[in-house]
Structure formats: C-alpha cells, structure tokens
Image 1: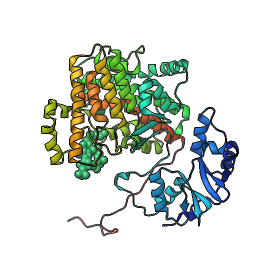
Image 2 (image 1 turned 60 degrees about the vertical axis):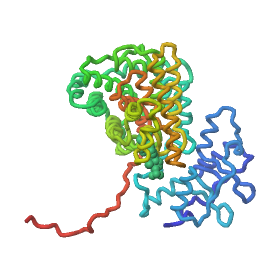
Image 3 (image 1 turned 180 degrees about the vertical axis):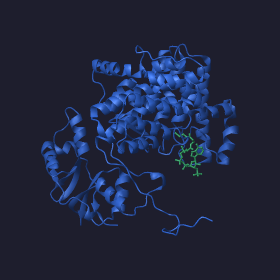
Image 4 (image 1 turned 45 degrees about the vertical axis):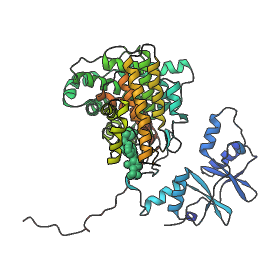
Length: 508
Ligand SMILES: CC(C)(COP(=O)(O)OP(=O)(O)OC[C@H]1O[C@@H](n2cnc3c(N)ncnc32)[C@H](O)[C@@H]1OP(=O)(O)O)[C@@H](O)C(=O)NCCC(=O)NCCS
C-alpha cells in the first residue's frame, strides 16, 4: 500500500489568518483544491475547507477573515503514513482534508477523496456490510452516533420536527432551503397538493394490487405504473428541473397510494386526498376517512419529519446505486422500497408494542424482560447500531407522546399507554444496565414510534408504510444529489470459489 506522499497535493495552498477569506477562496479556485492550510511562519495553525466557506457565506454577519472560519488547531499527518492508516484516521475523526508534514514542516494536503480513490484500486479490505465505510459525499444530512444527533442539511432534524410543518422540511430536502416566508411556503404547498392525486390508469388496477399484497409491497407495483403513466424518463436524460418535478410527484403520490391500498385491502372505499388539509391531516384522513384532531395530525407530522432521512441507511444507498446507473426516479424509489421492506431495515415498530402487550402491566417488567435478556434475546425497541447514547428520535417521540396525553380531550387509555411505556422504558433500561453493563442500551426510534402511531389511530399494519411515506422524501433528495454529480457505483467482490478455469464436465 503506498504512502500519502504519493497522493497529496504539493506544495499546500496556504493562507494567513489575517487575510480576507475571499482572497483565500480565490486561491482555492485557481489551484482547484478543496482546502487551504493556514500558516504562521513555517507552522500549520489551521485549515479552511470549502465547507467552512459555505458555512461562513450562509451566516449573515460572519467574520470575513480567514481567522473567522478556519478550523484551529489543526491535526496534521506525516507524509510516510500508509494510505490505509490515513484513511482510518480521517474516517474516525470525520476529516475531509489534512495538512501533510515532513519532519514537522507542511509539505502538502491530502483529501479523503484522493485516499478513497487509491484505496479502492488496491486489494483493500472493507468491513462486512461496508460498516463505517464512506461511499459518497453528501449535503443531504448525517448522523452523529456518539453525540445522539442527526441533521437534515445544516439543521437539527429534531428541531425541524419541533418547529416546522413537513412541507417546509420537504422543500428543504428537495430544493436545499427552507421557505423563508409564508408566501414561499404557500407556493410549495400549492405546487405539491395536486400531485397527491392518483393517476386514473393506476386507480383502475389498485383493487387487484391491494388484493394480492400488503400496502408496502403493493406500493412497488403501483408506483412503477404511476411512474410509467407519467412518462418518467431516465435521470441521465433529463435536466435538474425535470428531475425535481418527478421527485415531487413521487413524494406526493406515495402516501395517497399507501392509504388507498390499505383501505382497499380492508374492504373499504378509497378516500381521495383533500387539498384543504395539511400533509399529515390529509394522510390520516385518507387512511381512516375521518378528520383527525389537530393534536393527532401534529403528532404524526412530527413522526414523519423525524423519519425523512437518517444517514446512509440501506434503502438510501439502494436508491443512490440505482440513480447512479441513470435510471428513472420511479425505478430508484421502487428499489428503495424493496430494501426498506426487509425486517432488518424497515423493521416493525409494532414489535415494540407487542413487547408492551406481553409485559401487560408495570409490575411484570422484571419477571418478563429479565429472563429474556438472560436468554440473549434482543428486547425490541432498545439498542441501536449507530447511537451509543439516547436515540434523539426516541427522545422527541417520547415528548410527542407526552403532549398527546396532555391534550384536554385525551382518553384515559392514552394516558395509561404512555405512562406504561415510560415505566417499561425505565424498567428495561435499568435491567439492561444490570445484565448488559457498559453496552449503553436505550430506547430506539421504534419504541415510541409504535406508541405514537397507535395513539393517533394508525393500525400496526400501516406502521412501516407510514415510515415509507416520509422516507421517500429522503430517497428523492439523495437521488437528485447523485444525479447532479454522478459516477456509477460499481464496487468489486472478492472471488472465493474453486479456482477457475476448470474443465466443464460432460453430461452423464
Ligand atoms: C438495533 C440492533 C440490531 C443494534 O445492534 P448492534 O449495534 O449490532 O449491537 P450489538 O448486537 O453489537 O449489541 C451489543 C451488545 O448489546 C446487546 N444488545 C443490543 N441490543 C439489545 C437489545 N435490544 N436487548 C438486549 N440486548 C441487546 C447485544 O446482545 C450485545 O451483547 P453482548 O456484548 O453480550 O454480545 C440491536 O440493538 C437490536 O437488535 N435491537 C432490537 C431490535 C430493534 O429494536 N430494532 C430497531 C432498531 S431502530
């Protein structure tokens, strides 16, 4: 494996802390590099990357000198570090650029992108399931597992769920910016509302699809037809404007299709969308045929916002792989739904409710859950592959559940379920600490998602479809990003079968 000396950009493009940021940015452009090293004499004291510049330009009144935006102090890396070691360091620390030094003197800059390129050519070992491997640059969002934080673009996802309607977040994901005025919000809502309507050709075959499959599986078939009916073309052949229109259509029609498929499967008539209702109220209306309370609509809306995106999960990756081949947006979303439908991904918040049912009452928590943990069973709704602290979605949804109990018209059963869920959470966390010390196991999104959806009248069979109806926005945001700067995603596999070529045996 080569060292980073052979890969770095040398000499480094540099700046001084006191100079105007604009001058440093110009130098970055002239040299076609993504960062400048900030020097004090012969010492590297900081680094400014394109991201820092973007952040600074987004903040009105930000310091316009290099010193105001640089990351300092900066960690440097030795020129004879092997590429694989440098890659691990940069991934662990979350760096995209690092100044390279030789005997303490800055001699270049290495970027994560350069390292990835070489590492993929060599016989690099990657962890099973690509765990922790960076496979794309994205501005859509990210998850910081150790901090219990995730974000959509530059905003905390939880804060967006607390403070904005879903249409604002939808616009943020697709167009890259929140609406800045009531008029902008209204324009977006007016644009997407008519797209909720199911095309006639699809309506005609929905009963047959509903009879044959559960709503999430039926959605694949229905969306394929909807995409064809609307004439969606390969993302490779259309411009950004058309890709955006296709994305809005798929995001808008998905909840309508899911509710229609659910109602038909239950033997009820389809309830058409209402353009006078907000996204979540309309969703519950189409599912149940009755208008939800404002509290229920808002609770579901907050759940939907919190599940729009969550890092480079399996379905998002799937959508991007398909987009990278240039296929149409319908194909990308249908593939992503297939990925989400697997139990290891889309899961089932209903499993957490089933646990509550099994426990039955708070005094039985120890007697039911204790032996399960001792047997090595996984307690549903607890633990997470990325979060090593509280899952921020779980904390938010617990707040949503509490607010539902505080509503003046809350049923006693609502209060009881939330109190029981909270007692179970406390009891199970205590047991896990006792029996699995040091593993940091807390509730995950599924625990309170099931509770909130049940309280809002969503039946368990619609839990995962409800997740899909918001996640489609995240998939589309990722597809648009992939299509805008595409490179086909085509990794390799290591062949471990019998050594070829061998003689093809004759038929007996
Ligand atoms: C989500 C999940 C798959 C993450 O798994 P992971 O990060 O790979 O965690 P690990 O399987 O490495 O678990 C680490 C330890 O904690 C234990 N653990 C993890 N989740 C647990 C749970 N829910 N109940 C009991 N023990 C659990 C594991 O048994 C393991 O113990 P060990 O060190 O004695 O072997 C796992 O926590 C789980 O199966 N949870 C229940 C299912 C669920 O709620 N899924 C929805 C996720 S959003």
